[in-house]
Length: 236
Image (tube, rainbow, N blue to C red):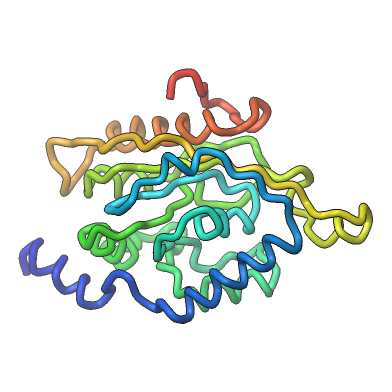
């Protein structure tokens, strides 16, 4: 089977957009919950393109970071995320199943998820990847290869987002203990890329490493200094 035949097969399997009704309900619920539980300050919405193809990237300090692109854009988004989510509370695990996130499993080739991601972008879709992979409280950590690999393979523009909350997303704790809504801050950066490689089928390890670092620097530029880790925002 040729590369063109393969991508066409995956386009049929993963048409974009899909699951619009279910995802619309989830988006509505997130909007209601966001208004009731948070005071969410969003800056940079003027940087959001009108259409895809587009790769959205961001920091991953909490499992709730994943609602940021849903809350800040109107795109029918596809997500690629952790297969197991071992540290997530049960109610969080329901969300990716209902959304039908493209699942990855750490330590495997993830051929299905990568081909599905490429099919989404080939249809001018919008794909969300959190380059760090795992969820941990900040600062930023190095990117895993996935986001850079997809960016190099598909040569699409990239939109960075940076999101922090005042106390690591203690939504109900803030309401109960302080009688107020949680403050959340999201900055949306300018689109950068696309990245080019001489061999899109097989980007080199150095290309993947350099592209991953560039992605992380663009995310770091949107975060407070204490969350940037080893990434110099001035070089983004």
